[in-house]
Length: 145
Image (tube, rainbow, N blue to C red; front, side):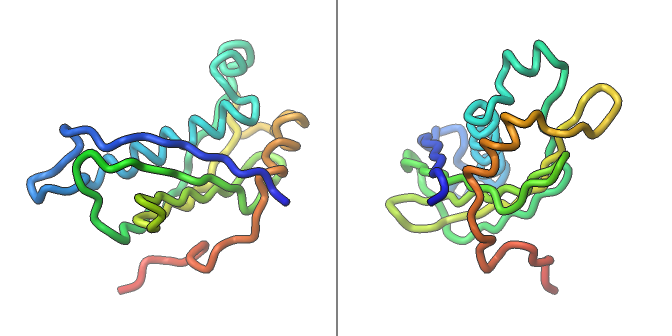
């Protein structure tokens, strides 16, 4: 069974838009916090970045906004990995409020050094693999017209 990685937050008043709901960019910001949480969990933390100059860069993302989120809502993001290669990983974040799925983000992230894409250190790749789960039905889809 794969590890489960959780990130929790709460909607702040200044994240609410003119319609009285969580504004679009703040979903992405919360997903960004969840990505940082994953980085810390697998060893790509602040100390690693300072020591090596390497980091994880998002190169593509697909967000689905499924339900409106109101002021003060408690946010629960579950993060898992659907693939790990030498230099890249595909991640999925699922955002829930009160157990209900309200948004998802699928992203491709590249491990980057000064000269460009670089292989993950073995210990990082191993920890990423512990978060592997099958890709959900929404993964890999394009935007439909």
